Each structure stands twice: as C-alpha cells, then as structure tokens.
Amino acid sequence: IPVKTITATDTSTESDRLLAVQNAAVNGAIQVIETNTSGVDYAELSEAAVASSTTTSLTVSSASDIAISSEPDIYNGSSLYITSGTGAGQLRRIKDYVATTRTLVVNSEFQTLPSTDSKVIISPTVTIIGDGTGAQAYSKLNSVTGGVTEIAMINVGSGYTTAKAVISANNLHGTGAT
Image (cartoon, rainbow, N blue to C red; front, side):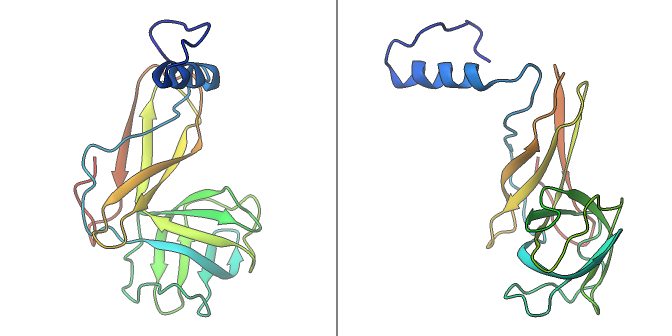
C-alpha cells in the first residue's frame, strides 16, 4: 500500500498504478512474492492429467503428454497444486513419490477428490512464515534452468505485518532459490 493515500490520479501511469494497487489491497494480505535468486535444477511437472486418486494420493496419467520423472522420490517435499478440473485450487505437500506407478502421496486429505478431468502442477514448495494467516502460494519454474521464475498466490491471507517466503523441495534436486 502506498505510504500516502491517493484519492485521485494525476493521469500519470505511475499514479494510475498506485491508485489501482491501493484500491485492490486487502489489509495485511500478501499480494506478491518476489524472488531474489531463482536457483537451479528444481524438478517440475506442469499441467499433468490425473488418472486416479484417493483421499491422500493421486496417480498421474500415463497418457499425459507431460513426461513425469522415473526417478523415485524426486518430488518428495515439493508441492502439488490442482490447477483445473475437479478439486481445482487445492494445494498439498508431497510426502512420497512412487515412480513405478506415477503415484504421489500427499500430506493431508483432499477436500474434493481429483478426477480424470483434473490437471496438476508439481513444483518447489513455498512456505509463508509470518504473523498473519491463510496465505498460500506455489512456484513456477523456467523449463530450461529449473529456476523459480514466479511465485503464484493462491490465497493472499490476512493480518500480515511481516512475512517471509521459504522455497524448498528435497535434497535430490534444486537449490538456491530465495
């Protein structure tokens, strides 16, 4: 939020932007998380189709055009975000990845089970630590370097006066994003 409250724009681009940000702001919400360093070699799976699911796991479709890793446990510690279809908007942390069956076991039950119309993203986990509540985000990666290019907010939360975002995956891949 701007230091000075703006009541009208002076028609400059900067003033228009400041007024738009001010009007869109929620008290104590985290609207944007910027990275200082993108890191390298993080594992990602983008827009993969779901073949089946249980309350705490899902299997990625072998018919998907997206190549899922054959390396066991490579996604452990990363996050799974359902981008579309049944169960869209749910974010979970991956506890175990069974490469032979393309099955991802997650840290908590899905409120709505993903289905064959669901698409998922797997990327490094973004943990938001602060004095507010409810903020959630996931990371997007550069497909060549495996570095974090963007943090996408799912829920902006509320009541934050200070916060820190920590980007993590597991020790099998990826390092350096801050």
